[in-house]
Image (cartoon, rainbow, N blue to C red; front, side, top):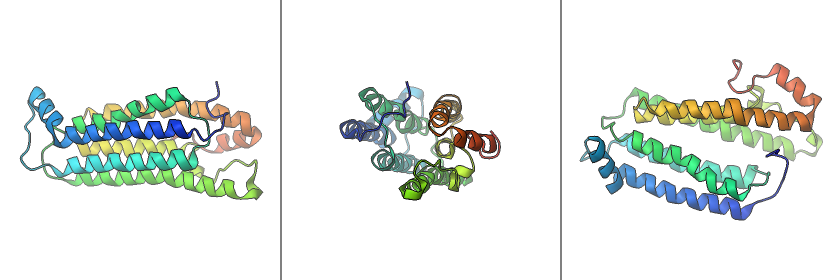
Length: 229
């Protein structure tokens, strides 16, 4: 089944997805600042700080930004049909970020440092690569002269799936801010997902749709990591 072949607004599905994500985000905030977090800390023997570490505010801020970006992506850029099973499952995939990083950051109670600064930079770069590339592609497709043409310019000249690479980069930013080595398991999983599943699936769709245009683009442009792979 070609996930990208069918087009529709899918408004009920998208609204349902956002509503579920809002609930998960509230639960994430409770883990960071409330009773669920205190219970988890007691369970694992982590100290609960009197003054909330600033990195917890960074983690919840990251999650709010991701939710806002997802909303823009779905309602502005996403043209394909969203099935109900996707609308109901995607929020729980994103719970890996919202809830997973909220739990993983709990043991880190020290002040912000250079690693946190690097995490913020990576997060901002990843968001820019992902959403910025989508704005560039949208502007290209709005020009009637480009009807039927494949967009290969802008950030997409760096890699065929630069938007997916951006996702990997902002997830790495999250991982750095948590100061928890287990967070890198999430980074590896998202890299494997885009590199070996979603990316190849989109490659097939684009090759079928654009033919020789996409074949030429694929020969000269790396798939995920710019200039590397």
